[in-house]
Length: 240
Image 1 (cartoon, rainbow, N blue to C red):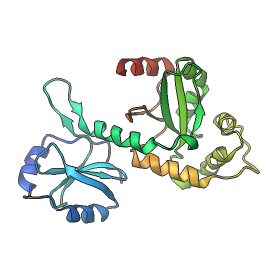
Image 2: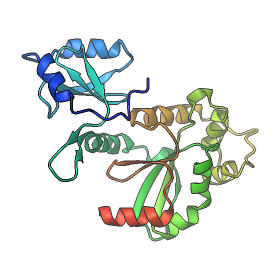
Image 3: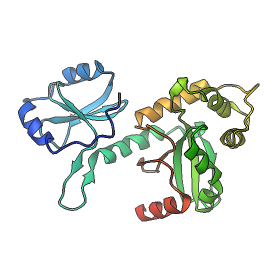
Image 4: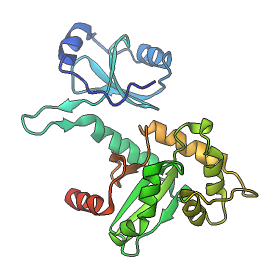
């Protein structure tokens, strides 16, 4: 299902005025979303009357009180200046929580004078992932520690799923990643960690990753795509 990434339209106001009920039916919402493959972890009122915010394992959707209608995308607050992305803010908090306790599973390239930590969902066959990796020294010199999680873009059907499983199972995963990103990794005889790669891929899906590299900042904000070290450092400085 590719619902995510679309923008909620202004017509949502008219839509909710027609469909709002006296009280949200959580059981009906959960049942109707599960019928299309969306398992909810929480349902709460959204800022828009008649729409409820449902957090699922594939992101946030906004759903009517009886579950018959839903919208997928980003909800913005129009405050007359720069619109505020409420969905992104909520997802950042959720993503930050999801990454807690994952540190031991990550392949880390630490900055000597660490100022920021950025977690990257990566794929060894991705061209821009390789570009990022080849510039690792520039990120570290900029005070940015890079931590990798696995995201073979096709899941277990990916041609390099086994390679990434071997990278995470290697005695020196950082060196194995260096070799894999340069196309010279020999995975023969290496313990496969399918469990870790599968878990990390599913985590990425739950966090809304749909391509690589996907950078996650310390507050949980996600930046899709490649960012050069200098630009990333400048952006991180401006946020702090």
